[in-house]
Image (tube, rainbow, N blue to C red; front, side, top):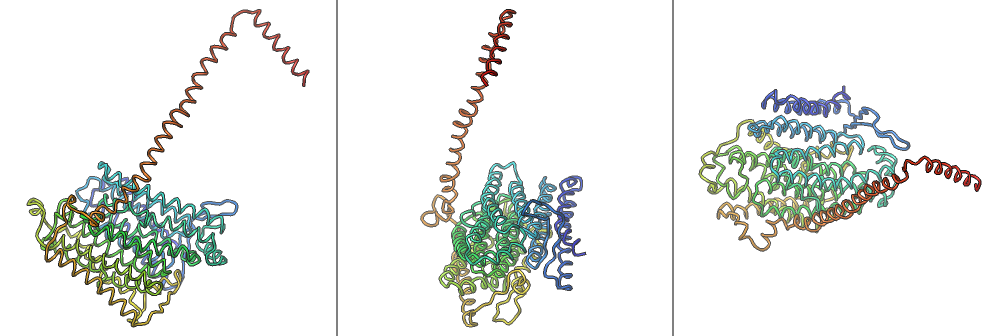
Length: 629
């Protein structure tokens, strides 16, 4: 029974992909949406049944080997699935949040002609994401890893008639391939070092290596390069903001709750290796903190509602990696868990706003929407409070735990992270007040058509808002004396982290975190709520704000330093080596052949005496050579 449930979890969305793709147009838009949503819901229910069986029997892990995939001397890789506490939690996140986003998409994509294609892509993405988190070895994980990259390309470029959207899809695909190259190098080195890619075998054999062993350090660095690409860390973060070109449900599913956390999942899954690589851990912490601050500073000046949330995602992923760099594996996952609720909520809320404004995404053309969109307003407020770390919302608990772990290891980094929390709260409330408060700044036509989204869109918002409020209670601070459910559940995979902070220090850290969030809220309220300031036009922005608005011109730097030189090098290869070299050589051979033919033709004189002479001369030469030998 257990094995069947494990197989059904990824198989059901795959079936939904096939049916939606082949028969979606015949079924109709609503039926296709319900079918795709139902398949994801069934996967969620299978996971719930598996969880109940897990608690009843007490199994620490369930391994299902479907068949032998790769077999060669010294290396055997089965097509295996693994259900343990970590993978089970990820399955709940993927299918639970995914189901709500599928339902939301029924209303959001109702008027689109490509509904069947859209839902088939969503189901295919869900299948590959489930393969990724259920994989029993790194090779199968890599299948899911590449699969979600493919689906990301398809969904970002869903409206493929728009050239800019196609460019964003290609950019995401190419940047992720850079990270994937690092991942592959890590897998090759892992196979050479341990003779296996199975989680259990790799981790047990790695235990015989000492801390800081060069092979372990290299493997973990390569894996982190892959994680940086998928989870949009410096310097491979530039693809994610551009990925907002896809439909808003895509942004919520792939670029907020699931795919971008795959890199975090990879590091947590490989914690036995990273615990033996202190240098890599330090690099992860540094990159995570730098990404959190960097992306937050860029978000301060963005005008596109989805771009603000995109850079917010990059920043929150940075905080997750900061926790992992401290060895706080369950803490990092706790923020993955809470972030899935409030960030999916914020993206879907932004989609509701965009839907009400007939596609408008510039926050300078919004304002005063709280009366026209009361449900969206209330749920967006819950998401904003959660990401800002205001209690009792979910983001407070997970972010506070991250800050506590950082303070315990490096107080200086804690101070920088606290500044990042201030920036997070400020840009999110800047967005909230500019969208929902003040006077409406759009045109009369847009104002006339303002309306709340249909229930099929607002119902998922309400459910996610409840999650943004209550998910944090799964990991209450130790000072409250309540069990930390997330940490206890993940202990068989991540171990039990112990806190050495006094209760007084924990109260101080919580107070500082809350005060920082509230101070940023007050600052944003005075600036954008009371004074009603509106972001200036691009031409009038100067100084640091111009750098923030221009995203610190990193894309332009990459274009000049990498893209254009590669294009010039490719053009040189084409002109010199290909056209003049290879094509020239082929042309020369083609030119020589007729000349040789002309010369050989001269031997065909038609004179019988000449032919007899040539034959005699040939026989003589053969005999002469034979005699010499």
